[in-house]
Image 1 (cartoon, rainbow, N blue to C red):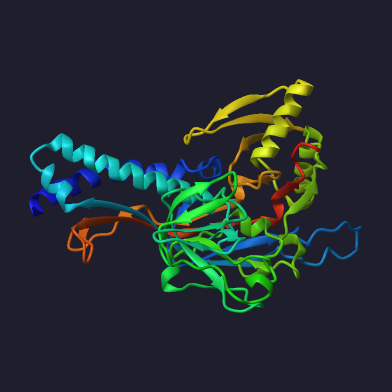
Image 2 (cartoon, one colour):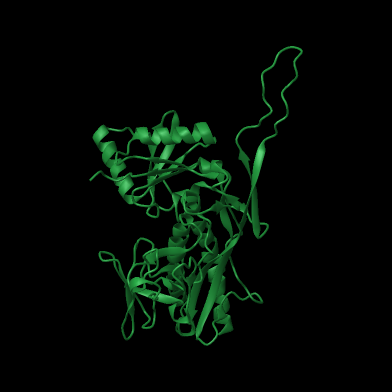
Length: 414
């Protein structure tokens, strides 16, 4: 059996690891494809963010003193690396039955690898646009427990998928801001989603998101709890949502209230999204924040509204840009600057987020398999399943978060 597993591991490391590492580093989003990646060298990620201009310039006259020094001011951004995993499993039975047929072995392994990759791609893409909390959606109804499953209604299903293993958090008190996770609510799996009614079904009969905190068991935030990916609460990437989240008091260890320069530019399209709106936001970012917006990511309704605007006004597209992950963007002229516009499913539906991709760094280790004594596939305790774990550690950081733009009210007027 060890010889068979050695062959499987060789296939996994030689055939799949290079491709998986490359795909996970580029495919999840056009944003991820365009930003820089640097090796992680420390668990704490640091960068120096320039604030405004160097203050040492001044005009003068002959015989008068030269300008006083005014060195460039900087703020230190700090951020902890997070753990990222791709889990690949294969049963002992599968290994035994396929041991005499190399093609069958590869097919069995390929199915597992591709399934794990799709899950990793989807979750990484989602996390890039999150705020690091890992919260996928609030729960807005009490749970209904049945003999084998539990159902409840959520606020938003866009970040949920069938098959996802999740944790269901409740609140311990009416004033609690952190969720509480019980053993029964941990690691349950989503088996069905009714997207029309936003009803979610999980594979446990004992899940409870209802707590007797106030009238009808609802917290002051009018929710019964929230959903996260398993083990991921407050452990995800510090994504773009952390920059645009107005409720977040700080980012990278710097207070947003005390440092207005760190807050992104926010404008309203007033339900009339046009090139003029884009131009004004991009120009403001350039003039006042020193940012060159080269990528604008639009939520579904915003992108549909912009396409309608383009058709109605015969907007000329400078070029189309195709990304590795399959997305196609419009390259348009905003003033004298070229900007790529893409549809991004994890941006709020009626918003557009603009970034200067040169200001972002994904500092991370290479994707590699965790090994013990050279073995990649290790038996899972209490099961007949072998597990291989592809790992990377790192985080996303921006040197100029205030140079980002957020355009709201981009949908069609009612």
